Image 1 (cartoon, rainbow, N blue to C red):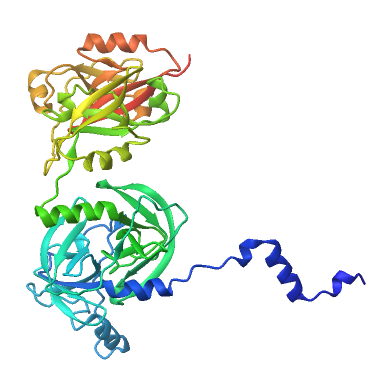
Image 2: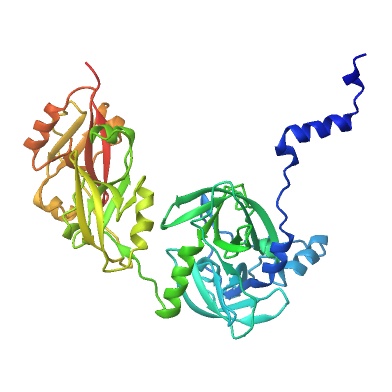
Length: 482
């Protein structure tokens, strides 16, 4: 028998640990971090009148607030458990229409004199807000202000000498870095969960102004508004949303960068409201096909689909079809990276835009205005007699005066009457669309449209700007090779 065959399993394991340092690397110890920062994390409960019960589909993105618990049979062993952790109202039963309900969330103290930061959705519609500290003290909190666009709320309790967190930087986080959350998932106060940063700068549906931090930290209902810490014990984010098809944690959670949250806090403290920069454009991503049609080597930037009237973009002569490549010296790799940059810009400041327009790079200076409270555009399109179908598979017609007024289109454009199988159908065009530009050229009339269509070379991608339902979007058409 060879000598190495007599080695014990212990020696072999030690050899593997020495040979591969990954096996010998220690995981981080969070005990000191939790002990030092746990007292500054608070539990938040609210009392509010229940909304009318309506049937709805569970959203793909969920905000972690306490759900209603199922009604339990009288005398059930679980009845006492739920009553202990969730209180007498924890059964989720609403015997009376005007009964108030309690919801649970988390928050953290950002000043020793009682300012508390949490999520807007945690306190939305609350008639009373109760803040409970880790040493079991309870305070009735005053709502200083909320900002739904960032999902941040600022509360104030009357106390002094309270423990506070240390504010860090979400910008300095690296993907793969360890982070830790403290909160009250399902009402279990002062619960700590750890994970890593999965991605940065995430854009979520209906959340254009927040570049979210994505993590795999276990976040569940009740964690909303709680802090996300780095290994130095500094708050780098505010836990806000989870990606879920069940309502519970599925490995994807999202936190608001602390810089965004603290900017909102300062504005709410000083003015009671939040002001954001506004450019006045509707944008979309540049796809591979659109990049080809614009003569770009690769997709990048934010493609301007529509310039809103009386906006800073309109005043600076920004045009549909422009591709914004950088904003005030900062690159714009995707369309989702532009809104946070614009929103964080002080109102009244002049910024520089690097723009690609019909193959030429331009530099524009724009004075940023304040983002309006609400932007809504609604329009409809009616169909008329079906004209001849062209080589794109489209049947189009001129816009009459009545339809032009309905669509708020002052000049140009042709109406798509029908779409047959062909390039336009493949690209996603549909009846009722209004074509405003084709192949980087404005469509001022039906004759213009037919001329541009005839000049498109087979096999080459051509961008088409379409107005649909009050919004504008670019699509990429490509005629097949003969």
